[in-house]
Length: 422
Ligand code: PGA
Ligand code: ZN
Image (cartoon, rainbow, N blue to C red; front, top):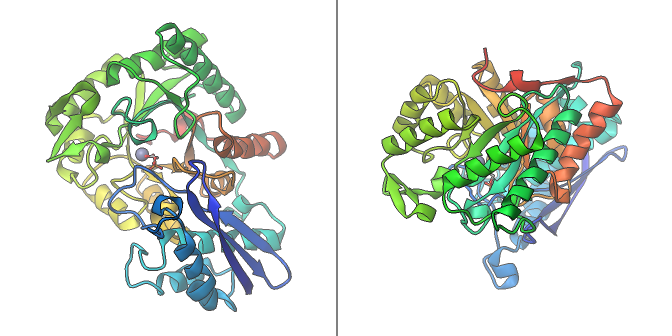
């Protein structure tokens, strides 16, 4: 039974306010979490409550904290914490808006996740075990940021993330060492090209001012080569276009190249890149409501993992729609897009039932918390994306997975987790 709930304004890795929440159960179990926050947010995700006053340039979260200490606490105290669905339904019932704009998606997620972590604490078991009571823990394949652009790096290039996946690694521990090697090699190459490799973007990736988007693909491919690892066999490339940020009157606007492409021209270019570079995954290539163009991309890029982030917004009914239209083949899972643990779990289950791959993801504004790693393991997601191999809000998640692999009997998802799943 939930006996107390407290909340406070905390800071995320961008130095912006976010929400901390602590829930105490009868018997003394405690759950304590800080929620993350995105920059390239989509139109269909849960809405954060912000103060919009003169503190922290309007980003303050005192109103979200107040909704936790007020209506959410009044509703949850006395409830059974083990019934996550009932807890989440009670939180959702406080808001007439499904996007949780009234109580705040940030407040809702804080209470929902703190409930789950309090249950784990009461049971004296790790968080992943609450979600997967009988399985051998499945350690996800990592997708790791190397070069950033878009909203995470002052729009140096248009593509938001060029990432790598250690597709040939036989353990998570090996995979992380490989991608760290690739990051160093890419930084060396960038320095030789006259870039300043000491600059890091929001997720710890290199923030490079390059001549074109393709130059970033060439740079990271060169980094893999220089690392001595097999290009495409050991380590492959993933991109997150975050196209919701680029759509301009139905077309794709590439500011760094001063051009605008129709969606068909843009898809054609992606197909070319996929032939020329060792690309195995493309996230959000098109706008988050352009189902027609997404369908065309899905037909053109059938052998690639086509990953919906803003498109699906961790929303089971949007995922269902995508499945019925045969759009994409994998789903990015961000708990704060859904705003509640059980809504997030629904999106995971809906994806998995249709053999869509799932990639659990951090946000560009994240925190030192590492519950995300346990959610990825507990939901048997298969893949995880949390940014670079540096900055503590990133390494806290990698470190949790390194700990699990080193100290428990686990299995590693490896490249079999990549879509298209067979
Ligand atoms: P965001 O970026 O947290 O700023 O939305 C992450 C992503 O787009 O995957
Ligand atoms: Zn994304």
